Length: 406
Image (tube, one colour):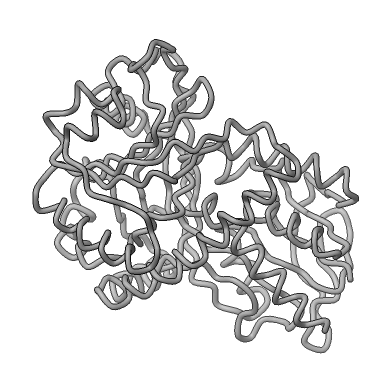
């Protein structure tokens, strides 16, 4: 059975990997190089045990800052875009305790399967991707925010997550590079089993391994539409001609909404714009972190990838705007200087922006979708957890295809 995966980001490549392992004949199509989209400069953290959805009851009290504050790490800038309004209203409707709890449960289940599948991939090809398993600290600056974290921790603990609350002194003991920031830490959630890796390097390694195993890549190929016959997709229409297959998987990130609509399906996927910088670290002990760190008030994550520190953050609902305002990069540099003042040099920080494909609830769209052709499956809408959930959602899609041919 020939399956075409649309998209060569980490989600599409993980899907191709799982399908190839399951014995399918696989092709991958993308207009860019592997990992060149939202995967390329992401936060690098693999957060298998700490998956709090963005849609949370606390968003309601943050709403004025979302709309008006220039300094807020979360921004909503209303535009003349019906999808933005429809998505934003659905997002606000999801900001309640029951939905957040349900989404947390589903994401943790998916993340656990993703961890197992990622480990299996590593054991198979041993990719050069600066992988580390040093744990994670999620920092909180106030007693009130720490109490909210305690409630989320207790919820996640009932679902199998191994975590504990630690005070500021324990934070510094776990990660000595936090010493200069100690006075601003009320406490943190420590998850010892969390990991990090360079997603772009992994995408490159996966593409090489898949090519060696017979997967055909059609890069630099732009999708323009579909040939649909009798409720099934017969072929993809590209600027280079038509591509026929028995089944298709759409892993096109933020473009999924547009191409889903062309097939008659509504996919509630909207770009959640984020930024990152990458800093060459000072190798002196205690200068730069080796443990993953998330500064919760700033919505900024720090991940050590080899001799570099990836710093990523912010979430903006501003449409497909690929500009990189200097102020946003300055914010990331300032956060790094404050939290890790000795981390490294800041003369070349490699600024980057990416459009995370987000759903209102935070749960990705996996498998078949109402009104879409029967042989079109979807693997999209992972938001800020694309790297974390990629191999798990790929396993779900692969099982759905296997079930369809039995």
